[in-house]
Structure formats: structure tokens, C-alpha cells
Image (tube, rainbow, N blue to C red; front, side, top):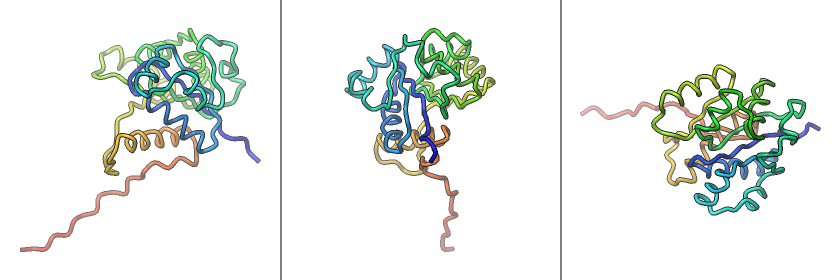
Length: 197
């Protein structure tokens, strides 16, 4: 019997806290072990946008670690994980990861993910991008990370914000190597046959 997949989830203070919350909920539903790290601004934003306090948020994860807990298991490459997702990811966190500035557990765990050649997925949230943002995204991509702005798809004709969030989260879980993730697959356009006049 194989052990369940392990996923590190970081939540920072960018808008889009619902993506991180839903990611934790969906991972739990699929039996994925999650290790959560939330920055102080991430806690504030989760409360503002989703109405959850730290305790309620941490209860969604299998394990929760404080940002200052540098001795946590996820700070070492010897602790095997499938992937790490930062949802949402601020430009500050992106910059820290791009430049190897592991000043807290979240950025250290991201650095570990990159050095171990595991999947790092950053759901960056900012618009428009300035040149520093773009260069940092390029740097992370060159290191093997995946820059995944949570841009909604509309081909599946979502009717609610929840459906938009769910579809994005399913794609992220699939990218993370979670086999049970079920994003909507694009089936191609079917030509409409019209009767000639």
C-alpha cells in the first residue's frame, strides 16, 4: 500500500485567499496529506476575504506550521513531498523565492522544493505586472518552478465564482501530481452545421 501524496501549501497576503482555502478542502477530500504555512498577512487576508480565523484555516490542513518554525519537517529535502503550491503568492514572496531568500519557513520550503527538483507552483496575484515581477517569474521558471496566475477558464461555462475557483484548483492539483484531480478537459470546438438558405 502506497502512502498518500504529501502537498505543501503556502498562503500569503495577496488577494485570492479562496484559492488556498479551496485547495486545502479539496486535497483533504482526496486524501492528500497537506502541510500548511501561512504568513501573517495571509492570515489577515483569509479572515478578510473568507471569514476564517487562523484556527479554522489550520483545521483544514493535515499539519500546520508557523512561518518562523524553521526546524519544521518541510524545511528539509529529506522530507519527501510531491509538490508545493503557494496560493495565492504575493510579489514579495515571488521575489524571495526567485532570489533564494529563505527568510521564513514558507520561502525555505519553496527553496527546498526547487533544490530537490520537485514541483513548485506559484499562484501569483498582481496586475498589471511590472518588469521586476516579470523578471522574477522568469527566474523561478528557469529554476524549474511553475508560475500559475489563477486566470479563470470559461470554456466549461461556469455559472458561479465557486465553479471558477474549483476549476482552477483542480488544474493545480493535477499539476501537483494528484492523480484523482479532475479538471474539465477541453474537447475541442464542434463545427455548427447550418442549413443553406
